Length: 295
Ligand SMILES: Nc1ncnc2c1ncn2[C@@H]1O[C@H](COP(=O)(O)OP(=O)(O)OP(=O)(O)O)[C@@H](O)[C@H]1O
Ligand SMILES: Nc1nc2c(c(=O)[nH]1)N=C(CO)CN2
Image (cartoon, rainbow, N blue to C red; front, side):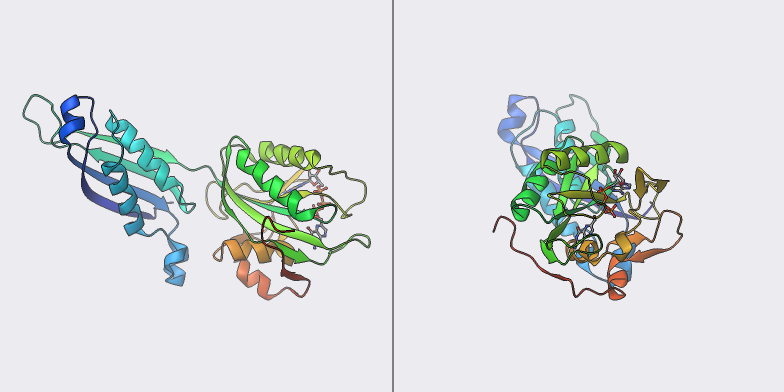
């Protein structure tokens, strides 16, 4: 990925430094931020929501420069990198902090630190429940994902109420989609999903039968990018082979990421916008669900 947004020379006064006089008097800090992200969705749609607003990044940087004092500019760079990586769309960030008035004791023009930090691949997880207190179970599953080491939840879709698709006669489902960034590998993530399912009384007796909780890994990495994982292995097929035909997955996914794209199958070259796939599906069995946290 070579697309980037580059914001240079964001300047503000701050009180970072090891010396008492630096903390007391303050000085000028200058920050450059280089964000690596896919700009094609914004290029195609002309929609600010499909990219990162550089003015928001500048405000975050100024807030950190002017905010609570750190001893080291390394620390200032690190917190700025963390703030920028909280934008789900950013794959990698480089932060340079300049301190041109630093007390160096000799003539000099600038001192700077430069760090580069990356997100893990983006993972899309589909949630479903049609037994017990469905909303409560799905809320607890999202909590468990938020607490999962090596996984950062970045977005949670609204709940949808859906008619069962396939399998025996069974009650209606609540479904949702969670998107996150994974430092875990896809297998470790699937094992963690199975542990969360088991903690909520999930059993596997009937294929496509009723269940307290179902967590499917829909996609790991961005389709077409180097971090995408494609697998035909039966124990972990990626992308999930039935996702493209399931309105109960695609409706909540498109609601939380209108620019999402899906490879049509593990052996398939075709990558399609989720909204386009939805256009070809019968969505009559999918309706709005309760608010999160409401019965
Ligand atoms: N992408 C994937 N996400 C989740 N499970 C997968 C995936 N690929 C393969 N599997 C395997 O599928 C097996 C059955 O999973 P599960 O019981 O959740 O299926 P299901 O929900 O009844 O059906 P479906 O897979 O059609 O949603 C699991 O043991 C798992 O190893
Ligand atoms: N509406 C709906 N139907 C389903 C679901 C689901 O989550 N929602 N899951 C299935 C197997 O994973 C089978 N059928």
